[in-house]
Length: 246
Image (cartoon, rainbow, N blue to C red; front, side, top):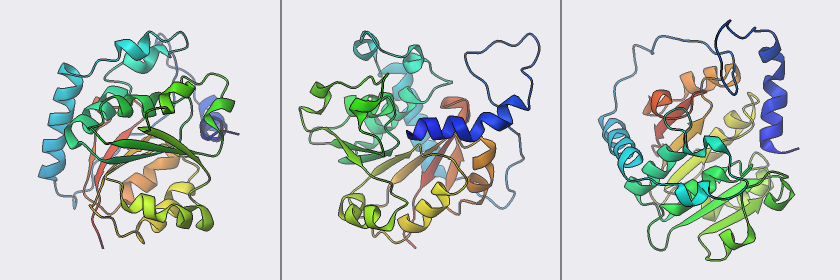
C-alpha cells in the first residue's frame, strides 16, 4: 500500500460522515476546520519574505508546460493556488537547495516539480515504501533518474534502522517536503527523529495537508517558526516551517 493509499484509507471515514455542500462542485473534497491562530505565536519575518519571493516566482517564472505535455500528466499539476506544485517549484527556485528531500513519492508530481528548478548540482531524493515503477499511474519515467538529479530511496523513515541508515543524507538536506501518511503517528515519530539530526544548514520544511483533521493537532503544536500558506499552496493545507537546531 502506497503512502497516498494509506492517506485515502485514513480519511475515508471522516469523508463519508460529511455531506458535500449542496450546489458546490469540486474534483475532490475533505472536511476541515477553521481555528484561530495561537496568540502566543509571533510572525516570522524570514518566512514571510521567503513566501512572498516563492509566490512571486511561482506566478511569474514557473512553467510546467513540458511536464503537462506528458500523456499521463494529472490535470491538477498546473493548478495554482489550490495545489502546491508551483509553490514547491517557487520555493526551490528561491532557496536553491543543494539537496531537497521528499517523503512520499506517489505519482512523482512533486519530485518532478522540484527537480525542474534545482540549481546546478542540486538533487531531489524522494522516499517511499513502494518503488515508483509499481505505481500504476506514475508520471515518472526511467529517464527522469538518468541525470542524477533525482533518486528514490525505499523505506519507512519512522523505522529506526531506515532513518539511521539515511542520517548522513538527511543532515545535508536544505529543503524538506513531508507528504507522509498523516495517520496521527508518522509525523510525530518523524519529528522526534529529525530533532536528533545535526543539519549542516537548518532546512526549510513544508508539511502537506496540514488542515486534515489528523494533522490539525500536529501542526498547531509544532514548536518551530511556521506560517500557514494554504491560500497559496494546497487546499487541504500547506505549512511552511523554519527549522531550528535545539
